[in-house]
Length: 240
Ligand SMILES: [Zn+2]
Image (cartoon, rainbow, N blue to C red; front, side, top):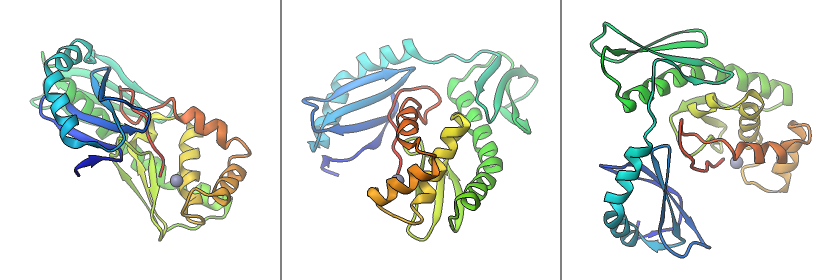
């Protein structure tokens, strides 16, 4: 890639994943830090090299602000949604462990340790495990209800995209759906199911989606924008 024309995740050794978003209206490269996560807006089709050199120049500043903002986890509930609750505890273990029963998960950290990234990983593990339990049956239920046919459902760890659907009906859903309220999780699934009929986001597609969502699809689309596929952070996510 020489020029930035679509969203992508740039991995920086020090700052971690940076979601880069090109905008036609952006005049220069701008970094944003939210809950320790860095994102960037850049002018559409800006050379990648410009982004990289701006990043190098501002890195010390960004890094300092990032560490000041980093999320700290304490014992107790570290994640909670209508789908699952994740608790953190410390105990006599060598490595971070995750275990769960139904919708309650426990991350056990070694005594005296508090590694944010490992705890975040534990939360993602719990979300993925739960997503594998609840999403495939939910897709099946909604497909039956609205008369759709699909081939398969897979759960991935995408942080930039709630879901996607291939032209032969393979549906991919992000574990991040476990952070959404039920009606929005269903909305994302219905969006993907509608792609089994219409691949592009044309009028037919939106008419069908609106019918499945009882006329509420615009409202739910707007509501979904308030959520993020990151546990903490502020990136916009897209539906494909
Ligand atoms: Zn779509």
